Image: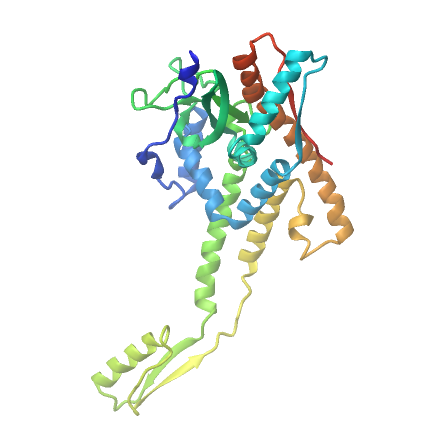
Length: 360
């Protein structure tokens, strides 16, 4: 590509991409299995939408994932010249550092790239601009995972995502080099579409969602006293109808008028109930989410159990995960951003500078 080709946006979402199929609505084990099997074959559209909804609907899951993302994106970082750098490498390091510092949204982009932890991969398009014959990255734009596929014409899922287009809505097109930053998190899986933590947590989310629905129904039954209308044998049909309407409206209005021949009793439930097994199940699922995302539970459950000292020990275990995430993210930035910046502006033979996080 010539330099002007790099300045064109390739994966800008359309108005149609704003809408979702809402796969979490009425989610069942059978439907979840089908969504995951489709993703195994490379078609990740429904899985990507489901993962986004899971973060939106589950506050504990969202909190844990945000903690994981921000623990890395909030770390200090620096750009240093390549080892044994000469004058050209020093100039390249200065240029890259100035561009990254002056970028509109670089810090937010680090958080966007960490979205791969939950969803397996994340893609940011590099928006290049020509500035005195040099290509400068002005912004990194996040592209939703559902815009991509891992399908291939030979039936074997690809390692690198392909962009779904109107012209090729099934297999998509290959992403050009030096235009995208692609961060992958595998979590032990062989393929990116199976590597995100939300893949593991999808079953926990489903069962937790069942428990919360049953818990809400339980609270409806045991949370309010029974409103019982009593009428005398001499009450007329109009009196009975008025009594029924009054009992019904008391559920929301807490006011009404009835005949002297009728009365309303409030019968308190003998079992107030605290949620019992529903609460226990939700608490257990939340702990499983905390362990999967943060590697521990005490920093999220410290108010209920454990001590400050134990929480600090567990937080130290979580720091190991932060350091691993930081090294992985730095490798992605070096490969997909700093290397193209250097090669496009100083030539492919110049060693690119190195992006590093500082973690405790």
